[in-house]
Amino acid sequence: MTRFETDLADAVRPREAAVLDEDGIAPHVLRTRRWERTSRGLYVLAGARRSAAQRIVAAAALLPSDGVVGGWAAAHVHGVDLLDGLDRRGEELPVDVLLPPGLHRQHLPGVRYRRATFAPGDREEVAGLPVTFRARTAADLACGASSTTEATVLLDLLVAAGLQPEELEAVPLRGRRGAVQAREAIALTRSGSLSPGETRLRLLYLEQAPDARIHLNPTLTARDGRFVAMPDLFDEDAGLALEYDGATWDGERSAGHRDPEQHREDNVREEAMERLGVVVVRAGAGDLGAHRVQTAYRMRRARLDGLGRDRTRDRWLLRPRIER
Image 1 (cartoon, rainbow, N blue to C red):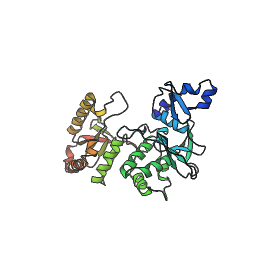
Image 2 (cartoon, helix red, strand yellow):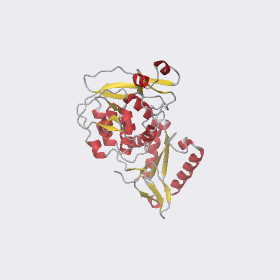
Image 3 (cartoon, one colour):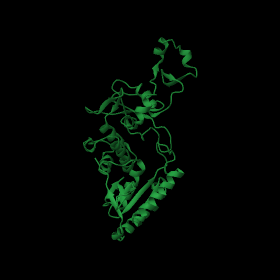
Image 4 (cartoon, rainbow, N blue to C red):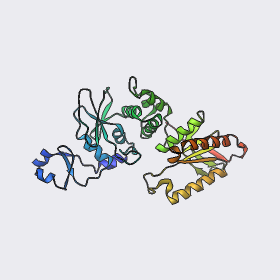
């Protein structure tokens, strides 16, 4: 199940004060700490977990008949777990509600209204919530992203959640603000990326080596067939593995690669690759941000080392991941 499907089971749909009054819950009771107002005239019992699904359900309660949930929220409904309504600093992003031309609403806390035009097939209903269709969601996110890199990150996530490449290529962009950026991102999008960090790492590497043959999460084995590693990225010509050290993921080890046991396993895996003749570059969020220039230099040097290696000493075999 996706994170949205799991959280939706616990989400509480806001109810109108008038409906609650008919059920015997008087207005003065709604002003107590037992109840929480999600927006004007709408309430839920206090204590509802503030998950992305809860926020989306609350925003959907405000939808006019022609409105639709879009942006990150639509992507989350479509199964993109990592687009959970929080920015990279952990701050909440507003839920985008798209309105047809001529319909106006004032922004509310946690909800941002946008005017948009819709073509047939641009919207659908998922779990009773009107949301933009996956391809339309992809177009909106790619056009509105802060850069081509971030647009590619978003599209990679949607592809990982099931958006088909042919759907992506058919996204109508003519006349849209941000269309050039979206087309560039579509050309860079690939299936098989497992995290935003991997995508950012791949794009930085491609800036240094545009013609590199990069495999995403392939399997590396020794010549006897023994499994060795599944690096995030692998440049086959250079015999170069690139690993992204993510800070967190969903799972038993909430600290990700910074978990002591995970860090130990990473070191063992890196040593195993190097014994087979693989060149390894590791990078974290800081390496792709404040230390981007230095990381690019490290990548170029590592690729030169790999291209200049004695290939007769290679003791690894590559089993590429099958991409859609």
